[in-house]
Length: 225
Image (cartoon, rainbow, N blue to C red):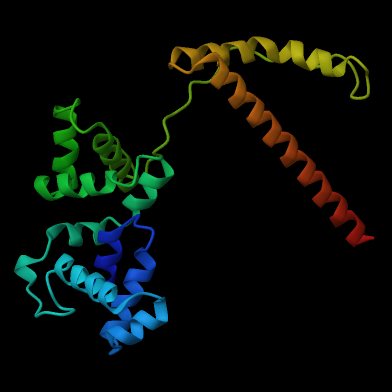
């Protein structure tokens, strides 16, 4: 549990795995000098990391454990460990989870935090968004907003696959829906250049995916023969 609390407290820190490994090694009886040599650090730096870890969990590593003085956020972070993944997935920033846990600690429960965020819609925008994601996950709902489906119908092709005008006909069929998508994106404050570049990237990714799938299917066919 102690190592889990440390993992949660350090969160997105690039050296989180190394730091936890240092503490784990120290708890198993390794000396500062041994840990420093093992991880390519100075003895002083190893001591600083372990001392900081001890303060984060309220003792139990270097000093006597004092549960009453331990940071309550550590327990919240262990209980809501998936918050880090949600924040990373939705690109809310590495500092946002800390804001979330601070607000959660003050509120006392997730339900109270969600209610607070609803009543104060202009405060802590990213924390509010993270609270929404966590609330939806706990209720088994998808955190992704439902996409409004286009009402524009795509015309079916009127010529065989190998016809020379098939590609042009596909462009004409997609153009209305394509324009509607671009307009909706522009309405959400994306620039024309950003929209065009994003659509090109998506089209390129689809082409590469199709090529990879075809190559895999050909390889499977050859293997069966």
